[in-house]
Each structure stands twice: as C-alpha cells, then as structure tokens.
Length: 122
Image 1: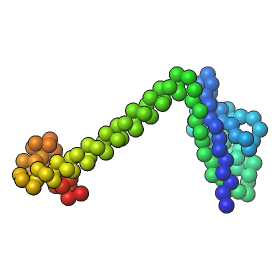
Image 2: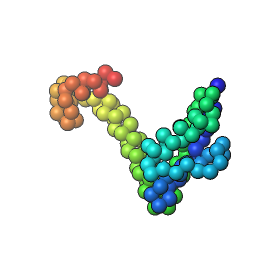
Image 3: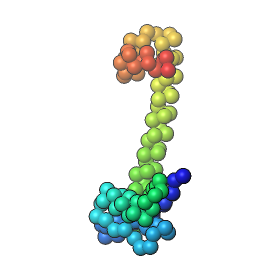
Image 4: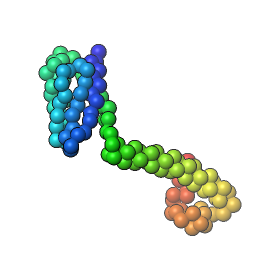
C-alpha cells in the first residue's frame, strides 16, 4: 500500500516552500527541482518503510498566479481548437478525395499528398 502525501507549494519573494499536514513546518528551496528533491528526502526519512506517493498542489497567488491561469486557459483553448482542426481536416480530406485526387486535395489543403492519404484513412 502507498502512503499518499500531498504538499501545497507556494512562492514568496522568489523562494519556494512546500507544506503538508503530515510534517510540521515548511520545506524551503530556491528552485522547484531542489524543492522536490528535498521533499522526497525528508518524506523518505519520516516514512522509511513505506512506498510513497507524493503529489504537489501549486498555490501561486498574485500576478504570477494570474499569468499562469491565463496561460493554462489559452493552452486549453488551443488544444480544443487543435482537436477541432484535426477533425475538420479528416472530414475535408475524405470529402475532397471522394471527388478529386489526393494530389489535388493536398494542393487545396496546403498539405502533402501523404498527409491527405493519412487523414482520409484515419
């Protein structure tokens, strides 16, 4: 069985701190890599005989948090748009190649003939 430990991670004045209800106090670090290494080292010292499952919840506040949220929303929108584009490309390739050649469809779509063939058969 795994010991699950959740750490809340914050940043203040450029320094990271990890907190958990399982361990008193916070673990500070200058970078996330250092923080994760320290969290794992301390956790293994506290629970040496347990298989650990460590997770992190990043609690980023203020302007940094706002910028990170904006990025995540934009990324999610881009992923949705990419999925819609891929489906539209498949439909277009199938429709076009039912009437014209793969080579002509590729020219119209701005793709290679091989890509059009992949799209119509996927």
